[in-house]
Each structure stands twice: as C-alpha cells, then as structure tokens.
Length: 573
Ligand code: PEP
Ligand code: MG
Image (cartoon, rainbow, N blue to C red; front, side, top):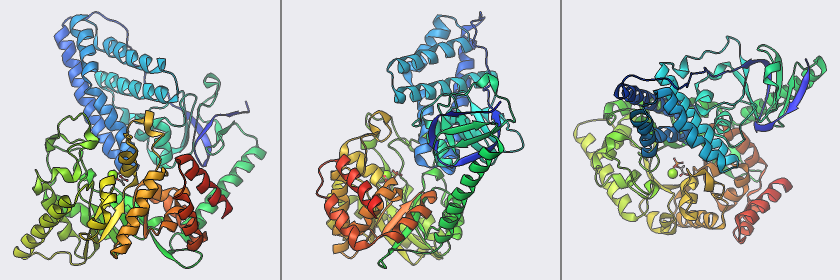
C-alpha cells in the first residue's frame, strides 16, 4: 500500500531505503509472589549497579560520537538512578510491600513518568521518556539483557518505532542507520537532539499505522520537511533521489571549499577551527576543513574510570590527537570537571549549586598535582605541535597566576629531568564567567589569548542553569548583556595585542557569524559538522558591513530584537 504522512521535521537530510520496525524487548512486569524480600532487594541493587556502569559507558560513547551536551543526557540518567526518593520508593515497594523487583520498578518509574506527564507540555513529555528509558534499562538489567546486543539487519535501514529512547538512539550502529522515524516524540526530545548530532535524518510524531507496515518496505523520509512516503511510486522516488543528490552535491561542494581558508569578501582572513573531544573528532575536523582545534575538551580522559589518568597515559592520548592535527594549532583546555560532570575518585561532593561550586580551575588550589601532571603530559606530547594551553572557568586574576606558577614548575621539572618539551606554547584562558569578561583588560596582561565560552558565559550572565531544559529556552547568547560582554572582551584583548577566539555553540551558528566578525573575533571554534557552512558564509561577508551590523546589534534592548535584527541582516546579505 502506498501512502504519505507528515510528521515533525527533526533532523535534516533525506533518507531512502527499507524500513525496519524496532520493537523494544518486552519484559513482564506482572506482580508475582516473592520468597525472600531481602534477596529481591539484592537483585535490584545489582541491576542498579549494572545500569549505572552501562550509563557511564554510554556517556563516554556519546561524548565521543556527539559531544558534551549529548553525553550529559546519560549522566542525567545515571543521576536518576541515585535519586534518594527513587531509592526510597523502591525500598518501600520491595522490602515493605514485598513486591517482586520487576513489578516494583515498573510501578515506581511509572509513578514518576505520570507525575511528569500530568504537568503537560513537550518538555515534560520528553522527560517522562527519559525516566521510562532508565526504568527499561533497570528491567533489562534484572533480566540480564544488554541493549547493545540488539542487532540491526545487515543492510542499512530507516528505523521506525513507536518511540525511541536516547539509549536506543546511540546504541544502534551508525553505519546501519539511514534515518529515524517515530510515531511519538517531540523535536526537542533527547532522541531528536542525538539524531541531529550524529547527522541522521529524522522525523518524529509521524502518524504511521504501525500495524499496517512491514519490515523491508521502501520508505522515503525528508528530515527537513517532515514528509514521509511509504512504498513511493517511481516518480516520487525520482524526486526524492534528486533532492537527496542535490543536498549531497551541495554538501560536497561546501566540503571541498572548506579545505581553503575562510577569507571574507573584502579579504579579511578569519581562523575557523574545531571543538573536539577525541582523536576521532580530530580526524573528522580535518576532513571538514578545520584549520586547527580551538577547543580540545580533555574531560573524556578522566571520565569512566576509577583513578586519575597517569602522565604517560595522557601523553599517549594527546600525541595521537596532535599527530592528526600536524602543524595546525591545537588549543587544549585543561580539566574542566565538577559542575554537572562528576567523577567519584576526585572527591567531588554533592553540591546544592554545582555550577557555582568546586569546578574546573577551582579544584587546582586543593589538587595542584592534577594540573601539574596534565601540563607535563601536554608539554611532553606537544613537541612538534603548535600547542596552546587554555584554562577553564577563570573568574579572577589569582587563578591565572596560580596556574602559571604550576605551568612554570611543570616546565622546569621536565627540563631538570632532561626531557624534550614543546617550545612554541601559548598560554591562554577561557572567558566564560562575567567577572572575567569585565576584568578582561587585567587578565589580558597575563595570557596570550582568550577564548570566549558562550555556553557558560550565557548561563552565568542570565543566571540560567544550562542543564535545566525548562529554563534553557531563555539561554540565548544573543541576550544584549552577553553580546556586550563579548564585545568588551574582544576590545580589551585587542587593546593589549592579544587574540580572541570563541568556542561556545554560538560560533557555529550562522546567525552569529556577521555579528562576531563585526566585533572583530579572530578565531571561530565549532563542532566539525558546522565548519563548511560557516566558512561558506564568512566568504560572502564584508567585514565593514558586519562592523555596522555589530554596532547596531549592541544598541538593541532585548534578545528577540537582536535575533530578529541578525536574521534580517543575514537574509539581506
Ligand atoms: C562554553 O562554556 O562555552 C564552552 C565551550 O565550554 P563547555 O561547553 O565545555 O562548558
Ligand atoms: Mg564552559
């Protein structure tokens, strides 16, 4: 049977191919009598520990495949497993009510999911999906089933499902997925975010009659419009193949052009570099035309393990990345852990406001050896590199002085040991706390460069927890206060002859490109996948026009006005 439906466009691109219906394995959650409540509780504890360890692995996988924000989804899942209320309710169900583990877990998780659903709205529906995802993981662990054992057919398919959880989405083998299509789910769900970040076309909320479709049926899916065709006729297929080919040609052209430097229409050269978290990202970055790395997040080295990585382990990992990047510059950010990224062996305690707490550079006064070892490893690994070291989360001058002293000590100790070390090293810092932006002219005296982290700068300027999606909508880097801080930082650094990069998400958003160019930004650092489009846009811009755009944007009073003005400016270019 041939028909078409329209869902919500979620992740752009066109997929054509056989569909494959994914039915999650059903675990019976019937109520059953139990013999020994204590033994049943033991099963729960074992399953929770297994689930936690699986989520840590998934977190690392998501960090490698997608990025920090995506990895945080699984960290939130792991935190839910430790929620005292959840554990209390489970204990009550098993030890007091003498329920069997499966029944108890299902009851408790459904209780949470229903509470979220009662609040109504896309955001809470998405969170209910997350909670059920964790619940299903616990049930699978109780049954000894591992999600990663689910295998896809040999040929690539469009995965069709009632709903997909974030765990399903990253668990599938990327090479075997042409697209995702779900009957439920919203465009801001975590599954949608993951689909976008792994670059798979996706449509959600598609009213598909699941009982009438079969595995292997040909489907066309347009992730940019939400249109879906089942058993399309030859004419329809032809149109979609043409569109797919056009999209690919356009991408190939952009990718080819991305290998050249980004020079504006009036001849201003801007550096376009990548944010990476692994050697795999580095390879992708080079393919996509990165002229270097503007942010190497080093957290991945410290996650998913029981003790600090040794200096030698670090040397091996950095060397692999430096080798991929050759003589291109690589900005390595020293450890930025704490906040929302916790690691048990570092002694990070639960805090009421982790983003305002013992995080990143703030750990260093208590644990200087962490920074010292990391700097030693970088100096040893970077002998043939254009190495640039960058401190995260600086909020005052003393932190930079302290880190510099540790850096000098690390250098000296290596020289004393007769080791060869990197010579061409720049020492810089991130501007991601408003206090640092405001004292940028003092800080600029101590460093070679700044890189503005607009993700955190926005969070701290507007007082919005970036992991709280209920308020995250308000967190725009185009808020007049944030762009004023960016402008101030660039001016202050340039006055002292220092260069400025920007490595928050804003750098890869074409809406921000004319503004940042006009403000005089020297280096744009972004996810590898954004590079070709931003380079193309930069080539079409005139820096003098962009200066005027920036000047006007700085006079506007609201985020909405700034965004509307920039949209209009981009469309008039
Ligand atoms: C930022 O805060 O903008 C940034 C790039 O760092 P992260 O997203 O890793 O906190
Ligand atoms: Mg940050």
